[in-house]
Image 1 (cartoon, helix red, strand yellow):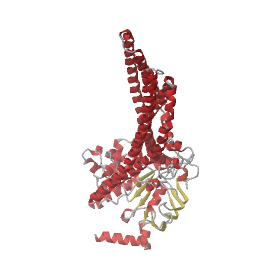
Image 2 (cartoon, helix red, strand yellow):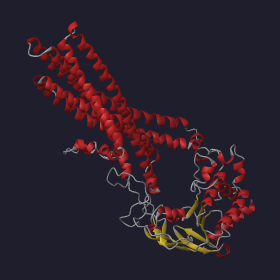
Image 3 (tube, helix red, strand yellow):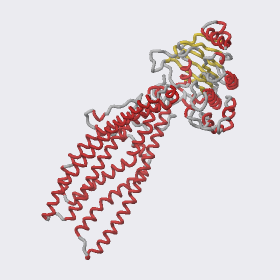
Image 4 (cartoon, helix red, strand yellow):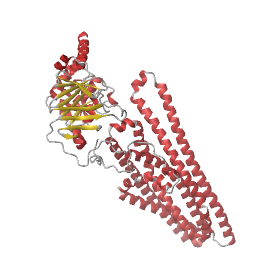
Length: 622
């Protein structure tokens, strides 16, 4: 197993947002535990985004200044209105009226400029934070091993990476700004209300608990419903992505209507969850606004009586009314903002779950350097391994193998014998349950992952072709390589002829997963990719299985040239491709049952001899 206390010092600078977790699972809403601090815990995922905001302090300061300026400017308007009402409109006050309206124009200009500056700053911050977050989440995902993706659906992951980060963008940008502005307006308007009329303001305070308590209760409900809506949306997205990626299989079984119906059901569940969330938010807003307006109307009725009795001027009441409206508006908008924040908190919680997953396979803090120059020696020392999905079944049992630099070793045997597991352990996609895997004498668990994998070229059975040009597909693992080197690799892999026949040659863009290419063409691109990487260890997993007899011979000749100075492990079911191997290991149930050259094994008449008789007899008959 990987040594304890290791960490991936080659991983991107991901800001840790949550405690460690081994898998992505929906977390319980800790705010419902009935203990103190529930509100704070419900917003903890959003609070954990603070490092992303603090990286842009200059823009934060500029946005805050613009926000305060716009709020203060708005708070100054009622003062001017009070003076206008109390001084009245007359010929004697004509100069005052001119000054008043000139001042109002200046206030309008300042307000417009500050609002525009705030809009730019906060939206820039929102876009920047989400871009940084998406970058870090993807970089973190790229470091998680195959074991994680065996347990987590890729569609679910993509939903979190796209839809959830979009939810956070609104909060990181204008929602937080809107909340701060309304808090300033609320506080400032309350202060000015007390300055204007302490007595009326005291009555207003009585209504605050009636307004705030429902806000707190509804906010928790909205967060839970938001989480449910995001989860159901992710399920629908995952189902759609899975079936569209297998569109040929879907259509060949005439399964379009069934898939469409199931997706429609998933979308409907997502809509129902979103509707419940919107109903909760609408109810929260309606209740808060009604209670606010009702409270203010009652207070203003009392104020009107004070004006009639002469204890308060009309201008003071007008000023108080405007500030009261500011308070009502701020509380109403805060109710809306609280709903948005609670909704985004659910999305942030889902992202923190991803970032909290600790890679099971990672480089040690102080890796042992691999020897330079690389030789390509491989050793499996009494290795036992079982996949997490099948813990009771050993894929390898006490397996030992030593491959000298430059040697070609073939692995043959029935499916499930453990051949591909050897490749997985050598590339350190997994760590053995017991035993050691070494490359050039260094335990792969003690080596730097990038350095280890740079020394290995893999041609898998299921070739990964990306929706990019042929050129970029071949140099996928060697992005700095020139075009001429790419062409030479393609020629060596017997791929140059069909590439030049494509519409734009090497610049032809391939469809997703290379659906426009035949199986043999995809496999030759993978061989060219491995040739270009020029690693000292070459892993061939059924590298010629999709080729016809003519192309197989041509590619086999090319591979023989490539394999000449490299350590090569070959997995093959077609024994004709491994006859020239230095050694052939016959595997069964995770163990080596026979070993030798092709001639030696045929002579022994064991499992290999029976397989050879079946295959070569069939080929001769054909």
